[in-house]
Length: 145
Image (tube, rainbow, N blue to C red; front, side, top):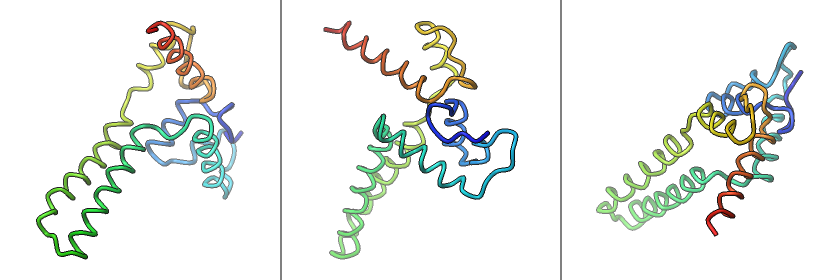
């Protein structure tokens, strides 16, 4: 079996592939095909279409734009005094990815299990997991009104 979509891919496998880049985790009990990169790209496209870009990735993009603006001024305009700001922007970008997406999947699954019954990262699909998260967000907003 090859996980090809969010409906079948367990959130635990999705998380591990995202963190390690090991695409062979998408394959169970068979030889890995040559097109695993295409399959993974399709899964990511589906994720972004349905759930958007995670906030820590948006932050990374914004900080890298800021860094690039500083680098242009440093090299084109000779503004070497801006290097400290460029370095800070780059560090913020790296921190947003290294820390922003860093969460314990099993802690989150445990919290979701309180509301939805067993949420096992090894068997719960990405689609169902994200549905649970969206329901919690929705009900939280309704309760804060």
